[in-house]
Image 1 (tube, rainbow, N blue to C red):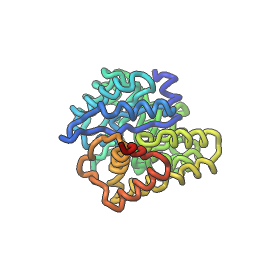
Image 2 (image 1 turned 135 degrees about the horizontal axis):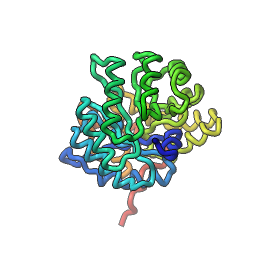
Image 3 (image 1 turned 120 degrees about the horizontal axis):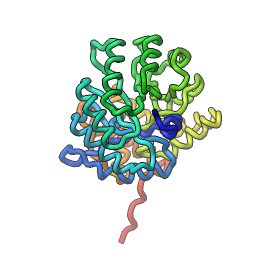
Image 4 (image 1 turned 90 degrees about the horizontal axis):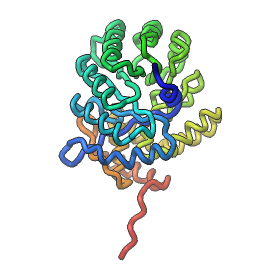
Length: 307
């Protein structure tokens, strides 16, 4: 049975951690420690390893297993840790076993991107991952609602499913799915801060965030406003990060993680490049926009005084 701590944390901010690489394009998770510490200190409620901001589809299964194990050590119980699971069903089951062994608190199953995916195939996929995951609670990550409300409700009714990260820009479909699914399921806005007010308006709680790697305090402030029902304040805070989101959304969303890693490098917390097919580096125009934003909101490190 899922812990009450995990369930409560799902209604907060799910911070999707970047996967740091060294100059040789190898995982270097030591670089993550200050990012995790700042997120925890700011009040981010739950951390996610092997999410899309963590370049999950750019990692080998062995790298994903190593990443969740290292993240568990770095987080060290200061917040619940959700482990992303996906790719082939055998890879997914292997990663579920490794995540359970590492001490993850739950498993977030990426919606399979296979071009021939079927709704009943997804049900079998989730069942096999759940069996491999030693009974850890399951959070579904839905990026496509085309499987229909009835199928979404059927998947949500599977044993062990406690939450859904809804990442399709359709609040009305979200409301339908919520009404058709078991009441215990926690529905989380899966399109980060920008979409959080719209999802909150139909009953979702919490949201995912890649911003927490760069500016966790702003994410927490937005969540606080939404929980208080202060939508005007939430929109004001979101508007104040519009440049950051604009940079991330360019090139068919191919600069999404690039913007996060570029910002971290500018802030003195270099986590390396992104891997292809993500864009790297930012263009000069994109870089100038991002640097200007970071300077405006006070996130750039002050230059060292001249000696």
